[in-house]
Image 1: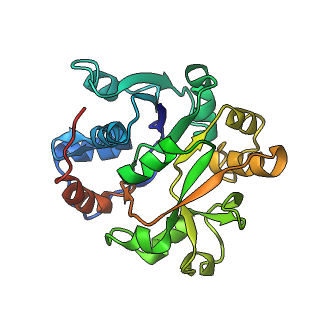
Image 2: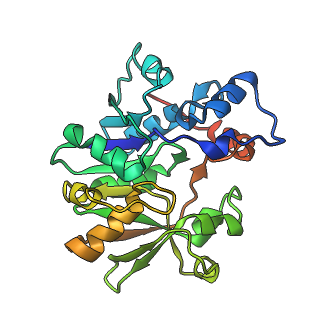
Length: 266
């Protein structure tokens, strides 16, 4: 099954300086904002993601990159990974994650696929749940699960989207960065980490999308449009597990330590 990785972001938060001590190679990667290529334990962060996808049973990955990428394509050109086939798609302009997905539409075609951030390390168990789902789905992370390993503080959860569900477990709404912090503080809060299983109907929801206040065409807004206007049904699969988030320089020491014990096999 195909996985699609969103690796074309500008990484503006990673570019922001901090007191965190970084190696020269890490400083260079942070300055470029290229999170997928960020070196951790002498290998790019994307190595860990690709290995986890292969562990979860995915045999192909489409990596959406910026026009100035040369690092990732060089990294995986020789030797090529044996456990997962790679294809690269260039997003020529930084117009948002929904635009990035449309850029990859010719490669994806009509097959079901998952899409995920290239700056998050998701649990293999969650990726497996999405691969085995027989319908459009997303992982609905519990508040307790995301706080489990100690990387994310409760206040940081408010930066992620909230998922509203009906009694049958299907999405009714996606609330980006909720204004009311009490929504995130609920024990039964369902939080999105932007990992989805879609079919080809998501492309129609991405087309004609209104830009967000940030001026971007964002995938959560396409999901909301698909639910509200097109009758798209997306199952929210509950999961109690943490996610490693490489968004800021301050994340580097913790993520490095957590990934040091991961057996990477490409």
